[in-house]
Image 1 (spheres, rainbow, N blue to C red):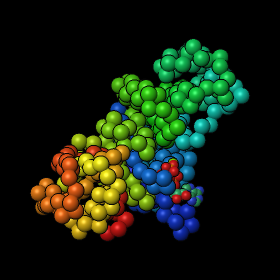
Image 2 (tube, rainbow, N blue to C red):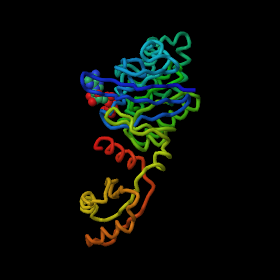
Image 3 (cartoon, rainbow, N blue to C red):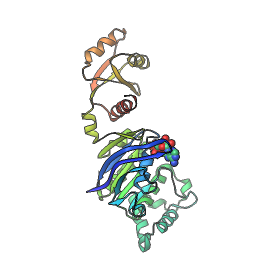
Length: 306
Ligand SMILES: Nc1ncnc2c1ncn2[C@@H]1O[C@H](COP(=O)(O)OP(=O)(O)OP(=O)(O)O)[C@@H](O)[C@H]1O
Ligand SMILES: [Mg+2]
């Protein structure tokens, strides 16, 4: 069964196209990641799916409700964690949840629900702490708790881990998995490539367009270029020379490692031959399986320059 279906969804602001004719669907219980750079159109898409803004054209359903005609129903049936922290700094964790529960009309089960979600996101021992004294990772867990208070079947999380340290990010993804195991559908946006790997399927969005959509494994397997990892002490100098080499499709730095992306017909031998004309020694070149970042960077470039 599908939790989300959209067809030709578009949102314009004046002449500017923020979301450009995108179509996709998300299955019930799936973790679906929306990955894209700043300004790609992630938040605008989420807001259309959550019934907060109305599409300019196109159509869609969320949990079976029409995103244009049944926005109020959608709001009751989904959980939404916005990109901007929207809870009250001068209230405690528990007070925030009580307040939220009243708005969402959780009803007589509110107390029980609060206890349950606090346990779920593992912050029950902090429930009497003022929000403004909490680290970002805990604030984000509180925001997640607030989003699931009314027990929605689908959760929209807009960059839930931004500003959160790596340990806490991993923890947060553990919580997301737990929700998915309960049968909830998760639609999550992120900037972080490593996080997108946790998702069942990933869609790349850039300049409002969907430029790829598949499982992390398939995205890498179906990549139509070769990726070579190169180690060399003076990596910046070599990087510059590879940047200007006619056989280079793309070149990127990962720390001190160089990733060289070429057409399939470029061999390791050609690369070492080219490098030897530069009179370097002690260079290691190895063909590797592409990382998601390799795939993403190349796809975005292809989409914006061709
Ligand atoms: N209400 C609005 N009026 C005009 N332009 C807008 C409006 N909302 C968003 N935009 C523009 O639409 C584009 C997409 O914005 P959006 O917030 O969806 O991107 P995003 O992928 O969520 O980016 P980020 O990673 O920074 O959160 C941006 O160029 C933004 O400036
Ligand atoms: Mg955003």
